[in-house]
Length: 401
Image (cartoon, rainbow, N blue to C red; front, side, top):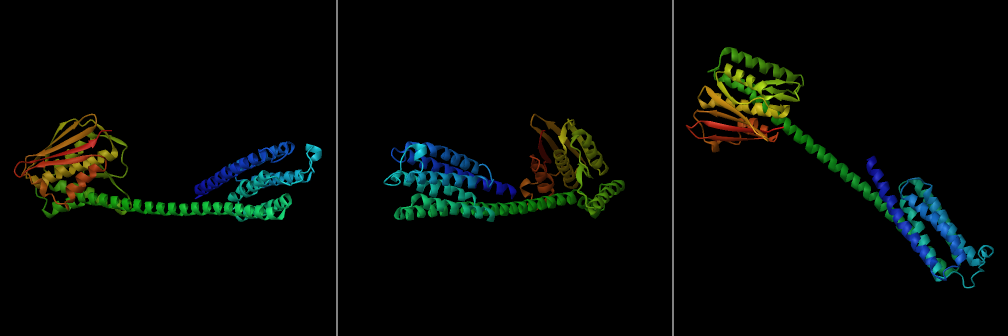
């Protein structure tokens, strides 16, 4: 919110500076018209207009309350010089006697531009607080009195005062609208921020739910499935070992930890920033060897992968091998690791019963979540090639760092 307030002040100040300096230039040009005022009077007015310009320029760059009164003071002095010149009080300085016809049309136009445009612009920056509004009221009163003294003639005075009031009223409206607009924008930005945070939290909860589902599917449910089938094809020691791993994982979850996979079938609380693929493939081989599935490895495993990519790659690979063990009807699978400049691939192949790829249902958590979705979260992909009676090949791909 503090930043928005600063931006609001900057917008209001720059608007007041631009409007005020434009009005001051136009007023000075009116007075510079031949015959508007005597040359000696114009010489006295130019420094006052310079002071007014400096005050308006600083008004647009600083929040100090020094500059609005200075701008009003400079404008008031300009009016007083015009009045003194009109009554001949400046004759000793300028050598110009009083004008018998009063102020010229150009000078009267300059006065209206000065009080209703140039000096009135200070009101734009004096609408943001009560203290500033008090300064605005005093400044308006001083300028009004100076205008009444300078103009004098009643018909012209009424019009000049109307111009002054209208100019200051417009400046106040502009300042108020800018302030209100920024407040509304800040409120909308805040609402958008809250909506974004709510959406992000919902996405994080959904991601956590999906991760929890994968975690449960890859560990506890897999063990329960083995037990439901009386551990057919799996030794008692392998079942005990896997159940022990699951028990440790459940204890970590109950204590509020968020385990992440460090290897297939195993989870650790502190993931490494980068790990060698070959160091963890052996863990996968040993795990499935205990469960009765012989895994033959081909290709290279000496590739360094970031921990999140390695976790996704190994988790997907383990799920593919688990599917071979449970569904292919064979006791051997082949894993071939290849890599090029951009991609690391694993081909998981078996010569089992195969299946119809189009028959993979949307509700099958094993492939959709534990393989495909897991890889896509790290920029990878998975493809399945199979047919009934012809075995299965799954291609897993992750980007190379």
